[in-house]
Length: 144
Image 1 (tube, rainbow, N blue to C red):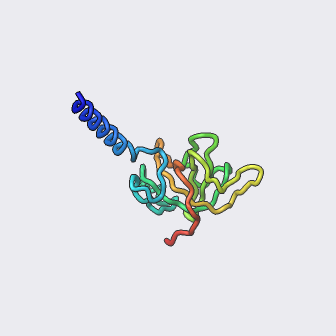
Image 2: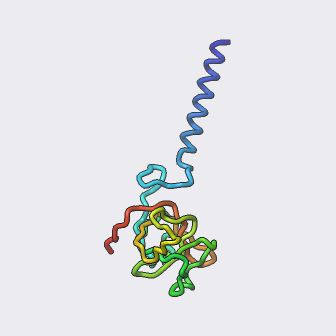
Image 3: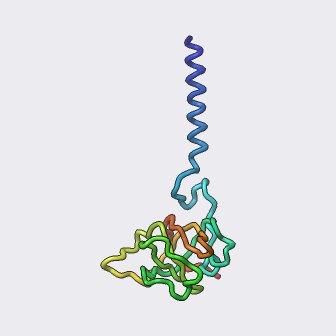
């Protein structure tokens, strides 16, 4: 009986360990340097509009434009929720959904034009592009 319990415990422990190891990479939030996620691709708004980065993790630096809209690119980007905000860089602007960088305090400061860097997932919805926010990164203008 003791041997059976010991074997059962070992098998149970092994199954629990296997479950933990296989689910370890299923976290909803990617973190920079986490082996469960690939390094994000440095991108511009223009790169995202090309469609080559759809469903990929991207790192993009630009300026927070708040809820001002993205009239210049209205045929390329789409607002998913009312809380989406606009990120712009030298190549254009795009809506970001799913969160906002902690360094940005929207009200009452009105930080439009503040430099931001985000890691996000590039998505295409009905032929229009949007970024799904994952986390903030340190702002550094990326060489092009």
